[in-house]
Image 1 (cartoon, helix red, strand yellow):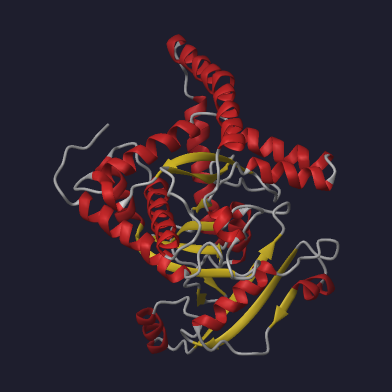
Image 2 (tube, rainbow, N blue to C red):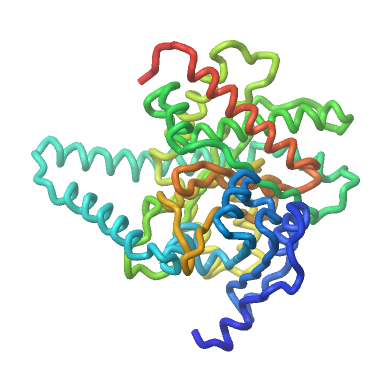
Length: 414
């Protein structure tokens, strides 16, 4: 790519960042403005300001950086058309630009070699029979189950936010955006494993999202919206990287993300009791594990690709919207760099992703890790989530309650 092309895609803001609210407006403007893909498939905007001005860096950490001689911060907002790259691909691009790129590539190769060694290991006849049995259950029976449930969700499920947004006085198109630092990866993983061995880190945050959505619906009802009743479950879309979150060296950029829509139960205040959050988390984990045992995400990827590549634009948009199956939210999980990285000697303090809202889905959450720490971002339709800071607080509140229950002695499930 020559300099002229790069210059057309990168814009340096002449205005300094002054506070978090101003930075949030920059994010929302970028996520809602039109990207003319006939001219460019990606763009980047660079902002600078006094250390801590964006609000992306924790106040205490910002003070520490100032003591170390860093009195200024630079923030890069980057957006790309999803056909060009997914979150994993973008992580690789950022990694290649970092000072530690060689070390990051070595980590990928080490993981690849581990997988190759497992695949090359000699297998007994019973092990081979087990593999064929798994493939039959996964691809044949799993496909039937996945497509049946997907069709059920598409034609039977409802989105409780649809009527709320339709009758809202807030203009359509406005967004609510925020982020939170949560805890260490180890702590979040420990909370899941304390409930049951099968509970993953992602399951913990899906349960937190479900709790926040429950409280948001309850607030809408208290505020006098036309919400007749709060459903016992909601549909949540969960993206899945088809290569296991790894992009092999030499592999081209692209979108390798599939997804499935799972019906997640809600835990209302009336039936919340001691240990109930742990039980709810185990149930959420079991539902997600059931979907992951089917090729639902691969089927979703193939349907989206066929519709995008061969169907008329109007029909493709209709198919993709229908495939959302009345999902209330998307909860995506991005595994970041395991250690802090640098660009030209300067520390990279925060790496975060924001997911623009697809048609029909009012809430998008990205769970991400970086240098051993967990964080999340929220982007929502303002009609559905008028105050996104409160929504994020509800997620943090549920996380704290799950942590508290995890510290209570109990018998761990298998």
